[in-house]
Image 1 (cartoon, rainbow, N blue to C red):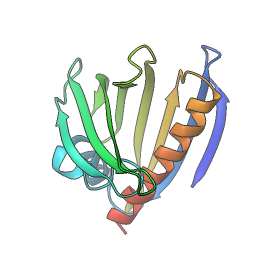
Image 2: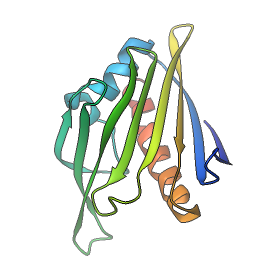
Image 3: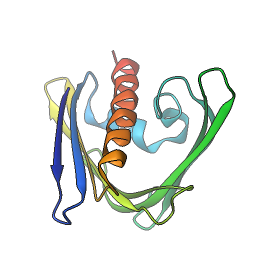
Length: 154
């Protein structure tokens, strides 16, 4: 795994994560675009999924809602969603990203899927993050999710 921190053109923080996934691009792409598959890897740690909705078309929306355990003190519910801005099947997804609790903080995620022998080089670029704390949290969350995605195809 490679992780890079940088500031995008907007001057706001961004992050880049790369992984080699042991599956062809079509299968990895499907894991990002099929609600039944996304709940198998999306989110940090052990999540209880409440909903996953995907309208896979430019201008279509996605939403994933899940619950996490907070150190044995109860549960927190999380919901994130966005709008697809670019879709190139098996190659590229670009979508807006925002948590329901902070609707004013809209960022953008670009995911590319490049063939690499019998696998895929997945590159995730998350830009226009609100601040350094947001970048840190998203780096942690995306890293945990990509760990689970990698394990899904191991």
